[in-house]
Length: 506
Figure 1 (tube, rainbow, N blue to C red):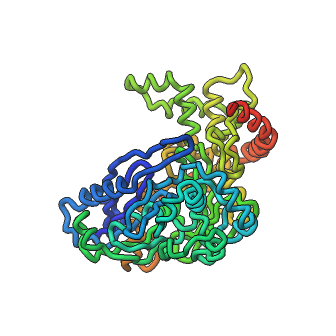
Figure 2 (tube, one colour):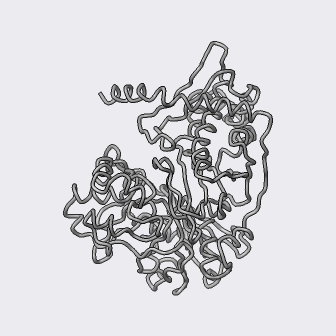
Figure 3 (spheres, helix red, strand yellow):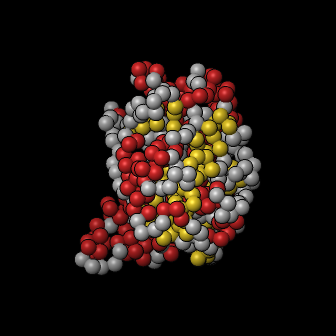
């Protein structure tokens, strides 16, 4: 038996063929681009996703009996607006998660409904990345397109429609639309009524392990998957990534060290950060929720540092020497905690948690003549660690206090950084054997959906195992004191950041 997991990503579709034991047997990742036709815009023709998905599935099926695939689980980039007309045809390119054009519409929705009411119902402020402000933007700026809307789908659910002909979504992905009552796990009629939009536009919403539909004749002809193969609801990419990292029980926390950083915690109850500094979404584990903090430049900060200041290390690497990142971290390891008085603010792309501020910027604080490249490298790693701890600290205030944090992402290659995170978090940090991200979580949800396992938790126990654990060391107390100093920097510099942003706009 196999389960296929499909992740409709920003720049590629990733598809995995996973055995009943949890082993990834095959993978395929056709790539594509998205368009930025104007400043702040990010769009994609959804047919590109479908073409890539067909290619990926056919690649997985080569050399196996297609009838051995018992389930397809879906995940993908969240928040994107795919608008279909009454014939099921795409009306306009998908407005993607990273599109920021609808910032004025966020304010309009918030003013119309009320900030506290929005937070109570959806668990989040209305953000330009979310779906509802995109719909309002189309209503105001493309009235002809808006008048043709018959269905609004999220990216992975457009692929479901192509595979099955049916309209469904899941609660975790729907949580990012600003249209779901996250506590009740259903569409909010009060929000839709306030906006004057039809509930009929939205697909049926289910838990992530539900068998929502089956491969249609058209789906079979396009992919080779047998007619009737169950397609499981799946989840948004962050929730599916967490499922694929064993974050499936109360208090379990993961930290993803990608270009951006994500701190993700499961909760058995609906918890909302009072100021909306953390996202509160439904989890892909049925009946559960999650809190999430997002840092816009995590490993991306160290990548920026390497590109700008590590050119000599990069040259050595190109000539057959050690990896440039390894060279920089080896130098950083020779510097004591605190980088001898040098701190780094990692807000190179603005920030989301705990300071939702697009004008926040990066800064080295405390530089002196004694500091060298190795000090700056360590301060970048420390600054990112402190920034991630901001999200974890907010979660602890809401009653989630993990004794162990699962680390994922490219940044986990560095032993120095893993130990640093462990010391800053004051918690054990672990790595797991599952490295395939959201697509693996989608495959796991698929296996649960067809009864291979009786729960997401039992599937996780069977498929995912700890491979490494790091415990807090001697630098914990030092980092506690430094974190307090770090916390004072943004409030002190906020006005300066905004003044500089005004000058740049001029």
